[in-house]
Image 1 (cartoon, rainbow, N blue to C red):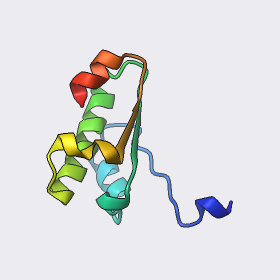
Image 2: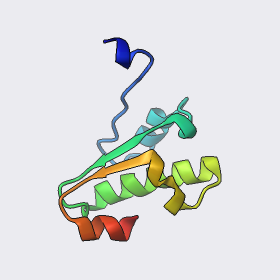
Image 3: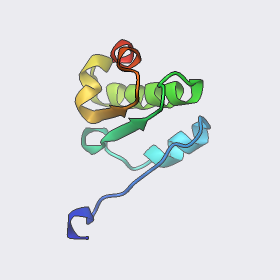
Length: 86
């Protein structure tokens, strides 16, 4: 597909730090869109991966975590939990 040219997908399926390093190597935080999908947004693994990616973007761009929301998309079923995380 023409619209997908030059784009790559990376998945963090577990909390292994090596997996995070391998999947973020070579990525530019300013052009990376992070999509967090979780049914309840309360499992430790999902929360750790979401926080890790938020910190990766925040640190690299010198932003507070609340300013990273335009680079991250969250999908889950409990709005209040999501509001608390943001």
